Image 1 (spheres, rainbow, N blue to C red):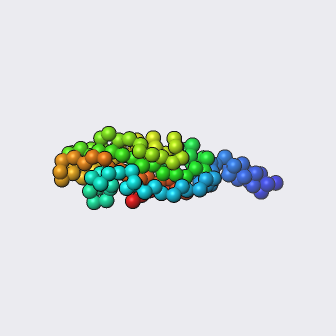
Image 2: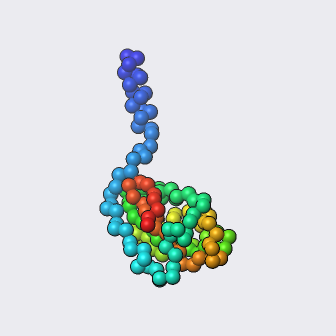
Image 3: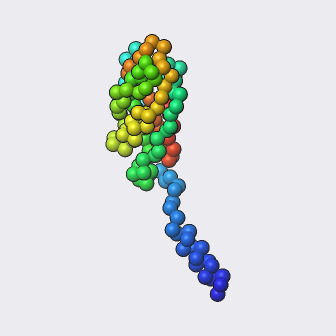
Length: 137
């Protein structure tokens, strides 16, 4: 009788836990060609755009729970002191799920101060895939 009670308690507690496993319900859309969104003089990350302090955004709960995957291209300028300015969403796929989340994260990043005093029209690709977030190239 005691074993049955303990088994019931264990099953009851197990059912109270949240399921934090990502279950994809959409295919990951192909990465965009970020250079296609830019002009030859724009910065596109790499050595020019060196982040000193950054945190990747959390996967948006609504997208995670819905099994959605996608990406966001964030456009920004970097001030002479290395602060992001004019941060905006260039494009996000699927629209409305990842852009705002990515923009808020990039607004808090800090960059190495640009050698020429200012960098304009920089772009960063953030991928939301299989429940994790990464920076694209």
